[in-house]
Image (cartoon, rainbow, N blue to C red; front, top):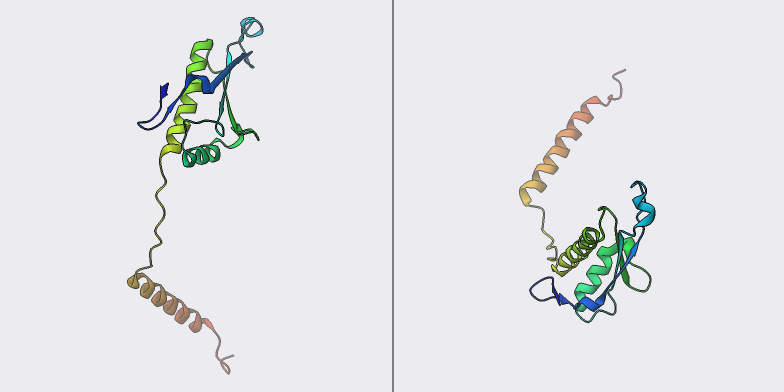
Amino acid sequence: MIRITDTIAIDESELSESFVRASGPGGQNVNKVSSAVQLRFDVRQSPSLPNDVALRLMRLAGKRLTKEGVIVIIAQQHRTQERNREGARDRLFTMIRQAAVKPTPRRPTKVPKSQRRERLEAKKRRSGIKSLRRSKPGWD
């Protein structure tokens, strides 16, 4: 079991990793070694995640989420499989930690009376300035 937060722990068997060849520069090594990691985590089928956390995680995942509810994280920044593997896991665990934080609902607040009064006074001042610019009939 991998502990993510105090209340959430994920079983190692829920994560599936496959190693693929990394794209980009790397010389001859890039054509021979499969150092990039594709980490897959099935959010919908995971018994470890509470329902509300799973929903927030799916929203957070964005384009990394497949139609089947699987998060796919690709890590290829490092030259070794192990470092890429750690990087992919860290990114997944960070996402789960973010999803575990319950959002506080926004409480609507009223505009203070003083601000309303100031706004109306400013409108009256502006109106007065503009009314002075208007030409009066017979002042041609």
